[in-house]
Image 1 (cartoon, rainbow, N blue to C red):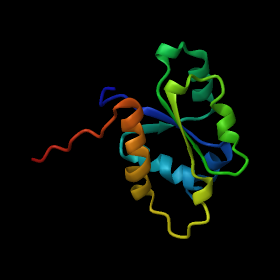
Image 2 (cartoon, rainbow, N blue to C red):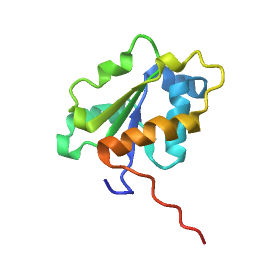
Image 3 (cartoon, helix red, strand yellow):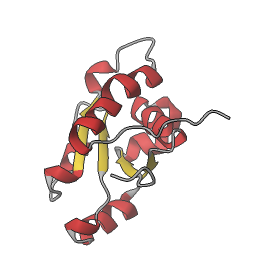
Amino acid sequence: MTESEEFIVFLCTSAAKAGSTKLSFRIASHLKTMGIADIGNLQHLALQQAAPQADQKKMIFINDCRSGCVNVITQGFQKEKYIYFDISPLLPANEFDVEKYVHAEILPTLNDKWNYSLPALHSA
């Protein structure tokens, strides 16, 4: 995977609308701030589904509700093209460190699955 290739993060539509009040949105926003991923919407999802597998971007799906609606939108995609994170068990946590979760869970999973690592920061 090249350093310039970004992932697309998909969330439940209600999480995207609720913004920073939802944990999945805060995680996705952190990934976007880091330059790792863009947050997708239903139009992006439709484009991904219509594209040949070779042209699909790698995707991250983050579920933060007990209904598991995000799992449903993974249907039709090859497992090689996405990673699914279910953070619903983490929701009762009073103090949740998004940055720590990204570095402890998401980045290692991206590395294991797609050999992705953050580009090294160059010092001046």
